[in-house]
Length: 338
Image (cartoon, rainbow, N blue to C red; front, side, top):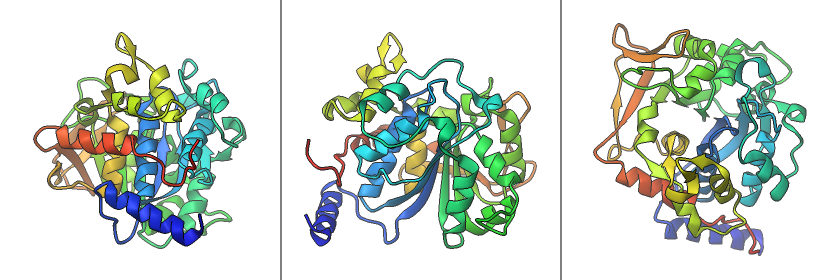
């Protein structure tokens, strides 16, 4: 298939899928804790499907949680390679003191060992901060959306970074210049009774980001993904799909995530990052700010307004569930038949 034929084929697939192409794909950096939960694999499936539809451009994927298997980046690359996007830059957070997973992931080593990829162990990958700075520096001003679905350690590192060979701008200057929006799955709103997992991984980073981040932040609390159950739809996909395999291996309830599905925190965040808070699906709360304490508790405060907002599902989650399932089961456009 030549390049012209391939592009025509890709357009046809996108139109058949029922989604019109955006005039300009949304440029996304995904910051993921691809280790403990398989909704990160689902989120990467959603992003790859949106890339295939012409709605998104995946600039890079960085990981923010350390797994003893050292296979988080390889799992990312296995999924991207499945979608024929294996050339996407990948970086890993090297500071194990904050976000080390207590036990090996249930699925990342299986994706590393069972699916094509060309990524080394996490410790040998490019540093997440370097990937952030290099990728951001190369983009036009106010053109990038960051989607964070894990610990906020990489975002704190980016904020605290200094000028380097990639950009003469400091972290705050680089963020202000290049990032249009940051979507963060973390916390719970209007408040949490106990610390949410992503925030609890690195509460100090959450405080830094919430207080000092120089751009707009759209927060998606734990309560959103808890209401959206997906994953069993992956039974419809080929057995050699690495995303399906992740859900087959991730224990959940009395079985595994693929049996009846599981909460879809990270998939919803990617959908928000690319399609925005579609008014038929979301209500948006503004006129305030997210606050985190040193233990990881979160709350929404109206004492003064920052460039913060958080989302609430409008009505039932059925339409969101349908969109996520369509994207998670979408056949890769650029993949040749096996």
